[in-house]
Image 1 (cartoon, rainbow, N blue to C red):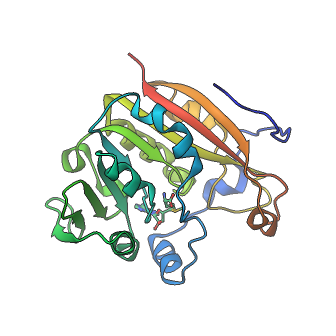
Image 2 (image 1 turned 45 degrees about the vertical axis):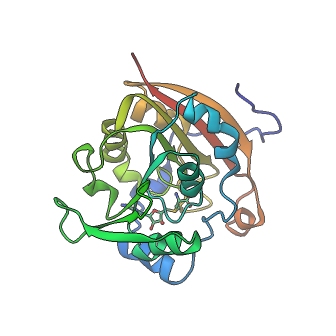
Length: 246
Ligand SMILES: C[S@@+](CC[C@H](N)C(=O)[O-])C[C@H]1O[C@@H](n2cnc3c(N)ncnc32)[C@H](O)[C@@H]1O
């Protein structure tokens, strides 16, 4: 299943260098939404999810699917339209409201017992619940456990110093049969400070390898003008499937 054709030959370093200490605050993320610096948002959705949808669903229907750091990802609408139950978490209330408005979905707003000051936005149809809070405030007690996880722009967006906390949280949200699709990025981390942050294969193994089978599904060249403007000369997207070891 691995497809590594036409990928630039690079030496993948396990050292994430200066990025290790880089911190993007919650305020800075909210500011990005306010200033419309949301180049990460894909209006047409992500081709990787289209390509690996069958891997995520694995022949199952009516799944609970989690979108960590969801932004206003249109893939949430795709999956809800297929009859799945979608749960997302996002700091920006503006992003979540835009999601519902742009898809013409009516919704209600509730407080979340257990997370002070946080809200959950629920589609009237009942199959989309988007938590407006930090992912670190969520737990399986609040959000339940999931059959599938779509992690794009999430592990690569959190601060490198929080990766272990994030990985342990994700593991605690997985049902035994959960299929976790994870997209990471590789580039020369000396040339761009991130986000998205560089996440080498060795990091995936150290974060998840003890409890998960890790399958690399593909590694593709995604180099664009935006990456060129960041001073990079290559940019790869790597897709993994994580499943809990039996
Ligand atoms: C790179 S964007 C990706 C959004 C989405 N996954 C997508 O593919 O379009 C990262 C998002 O995470 C949100 N975010 C950052 N830190 C967060 C946190 N601790 N908890 C919840 N959301 C967070 C940001 O506001 C931003 O919308």
